[in-house]
Length: 151
Image 1 (cartoon, helix red, strand yellow):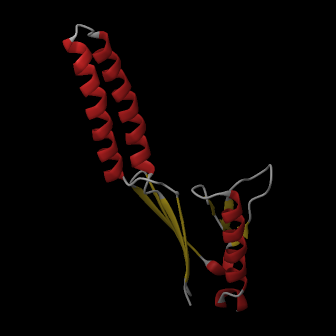
Image 2 (cartoon, one colour; image 1 turned 45 degrees about the horizontal axis):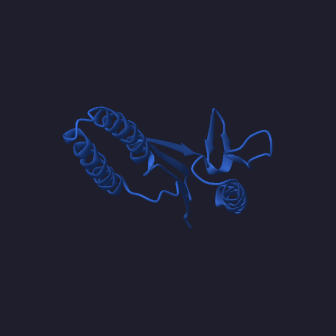
Image 3 (cartoon, helix red, strand yellow; image 1 turned 90 degrees about the vertical axis):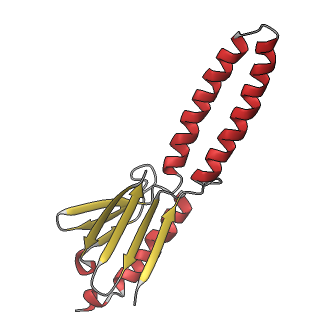
């Protein structure tokens, strides 16, 4: 009996596709800048460099977070929360018999709170409010019927 929830961002481009899009944008921008540079308008090249630096920074930030994910796995022995944020991994193991699921509250707490003795973990930052509500309900239902609670 294992239940798994995967909460991830809804991203249109993978990091590799972001790099390809950036290369295509640079080709067009620097191509037109070169055209104007050859006609004596050097300022267009300066703006093109500035523009591509800003777009590059934004796409780099996007690509670093495109693969962010939270995995929640409920097994017979533990509740495991694994989080990947900008390539950094963290993992938490909780006792399912002693963990409480607190759903998001309107105007107070926007994330799902998992409370165990000595540990509080918030999950659901990569998904929308309706999905957080659904996951909280499913997780609470699964935790109520967990064998560790029945003892």
